[in-house]
Length: 398
Image (cartoon, rainbow, N blue to C red; front, side, top):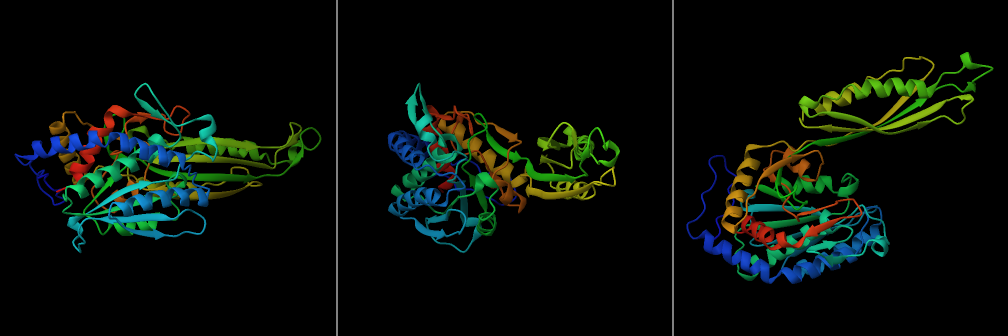
């Protein structure tokens, strides 16, 4: 029997002496289901689902919901007005004990607009499956459903599993965040289906923030009335230099002005200018501190005014002791399955940031191995599918 996850404080749960047999059986089962897993991934990729297209996301949700129901999942749709539905599917025995419940967390929306498949088709080539959303993260969803199918067929689910798939992760999870946090608080652990970091699992992620800075100045003729103008672009340049100086690499804090514009003509003192700023934090305490610094910004030229919007969107996923124990257990399972497994941190964020910030052990990067998330060369490496699906099944079983 595959040993169950323990979320209690203390040493890592030891591997059962007979677990190598069970793990080998899981790996063999995952290899047998590899073709079906790829077929399911293709179906999900074909159901293009950009975050901003509710009907497209809902079509993809319906496809997964039908598959989950066919596996015996207890499906609930959290319907939304502006976004696709949030999909919740429960598997295994019902329980009231959070320690006997695991949240399996992912998303079905992508960054790719409808019609991308015409120029970026889903194709198999040189041991990879290419296509929009293959890596981020429709293969991860297919892996989760396959792992649940394997455990359901062998009646190996002793914990209740909540599969939660969100429709808005790529745009900051504005509607799904409260659902994610509520369900996570009912669970003893969270496993996130985002892509691996190379071959590693993710035990830490930076938090993210976004601000827009709008500067209002005074327009004037640059030759005739230069002194009557208040240059919004010049004021913005001063602000950009100031906020960029808040970067502290030792703390894992970065402030990056990614887009800026302003003015109308070269012979006009510009009355408007704006910039968009990306902030990444590695420490939860840095979120309020950075928000206070933005709120305190003042123009040097008193004739200019500032308007600031935005804030911290996702808290950091810090490396909790419970997360480390989850990783150690995954690492032990991986060794039994025949591959090495490392941990990594990343500057990108996921919905796992929300659950980790609640203090719930959260292990990320349990999805596919590949390259090119959000890029035209997005693809997954097929040789890693079966071993990592078996690993996911081992973590869910028990």
